[in-house]
Figure 1 (cartoon, rainbow, N blue to C red):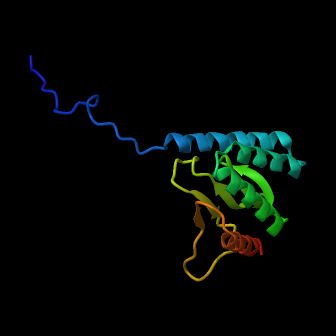
Figure 2 (figure 1 turned 90 degrees about the vertical axis):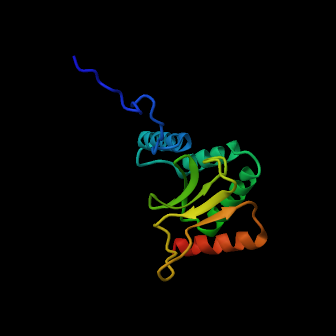
Length: 158
């Protein structure tokens, strides 16, 4: 009978490194699936007010200071670009044109980062040469920051 030698590292003792999704990313995907199902239940005659209520409820769940930033962003975006429809996108407040997300707000707690993020999707008309910013870190909103965001949102939907 031949004896077999075990390798120095058996599969059960090898270090486990996951290159998959984080818990936060998995949660965001689950939220997106729930959002898609809710949209399907509402059907094509979905009321814009229903989606806005969902966005405002999600903002209300956020801890401070993200809640204050989210509320202010919501007011700025809806005033600057009334054509955008508030909706949830991967569990984040987002604003869409013709059903396609143009911009979004990601609270710092979403992926446990040190700052909140205000970003734009590829649907935003912000192209400026070969390179331009698509997301901004937010720790607070100043008057200058609000003016910049308002101008960017207007440009994004033009």
